[in-house]
Image 1 (cartoon, helix red, strand yellow):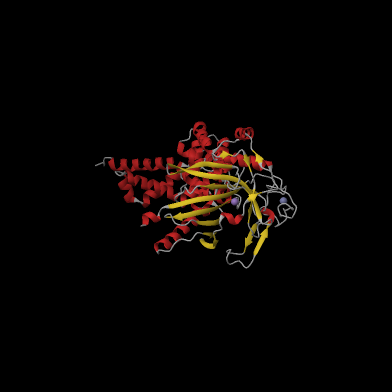
Image 2: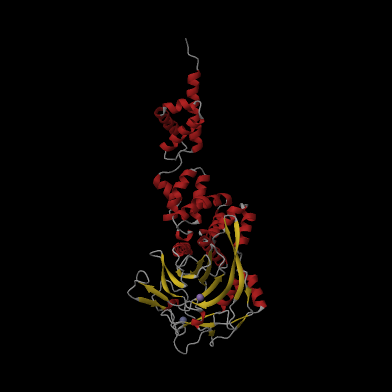
Length: 491
Ligand code: ZN
Ligand code: MN
């Protein structure tokens, strides 16, 4: 019954760091821990030393409310922090300060949703809750987790503010999971509270079940590039078991991104194993209607509004606007370009076709490439001024993306400036005609052969000939050939 096996339910539990914060969630240690000497950005609070007391970061609460509003959630009037107890080396207090939706717990927000768009279809993904919690420390393994001879721990990350976003099991393919994460990232980036290009800033656990079977939780998915791979692997694994008549066990598995497989970590702990109870060191936080309205009024432009503005302001078609606004980096890049050179449709065309294709094929993000708006604009200007052809532009673009070289530098070094010299092109056309007598004869009647001859001339100049002039010269020469045939022979 393959139809039943394909009944896939995926839910996500996403952790995103509030990367725009200067300090941690419950202490004043600096939050920019990346690339720092291990265990240097720590204090008694984030090391969990006895007697140290947490103090809530007010800006973190504002950011979290802003995120919850953007995710269409109901904001609680009062939120409470809970202790989630478990023993693990990355957690020096032996509990994580988190939030809970049962046993009197009230998370920051509940009942939200997002729409994902896939090939013209829109699908609603429900969000069960959004809450604030602290990040644990970072465990460092040598190679794969189950083969590492030892584990190192770095508490610089301990206490970083995290937003946990839990969805309903509303996604039915790994692709939808990726689209959800992309949309989420885009929204949080537009809010200015999150930078998804920072390593480990968005991590996710996914639960997945097939054909109404047991839910398996996959942990340690470190980016949305990985989510599709991890879930696809899990589907194949579970499908294999079901086909052999083996029941899928309820368990937690770890995504090993080096070997690209999931490995069993432990059978899933039950909620009660965490012994949730209210955090006695923090008071409940009252969230007034006034505060919510104040934050709502401060909210920056969200992607959907931005796409509409792109259509209105720049006269872009809906499709262009939606693609450009699908990531904040891309949309910002586009607007930078338009500021430098007011040719929105031309800029959009280059970005949507050649630039995005190259990034996609090489699995790169715009931020990982070296091209700047100034470079792209310089290239479009060179085309507009007739210095290079569109064909040459396509050829030099990868070098701009990979090495960040300016287009002028590349064309000067490679001698790629467009050939507009008619005498030179005339001489080269002579050569093409001499080398292709049959094509010349065919060209008198057949337009395809004409294009062949123009193509040969372009090839001879390695694409540098101005295509309009090449076209004109070949046609003029053909006209002469034709006339020489038609001339009445003198008796
Ligand atoms: Zn600290
Ligand atoms: Mn969590």
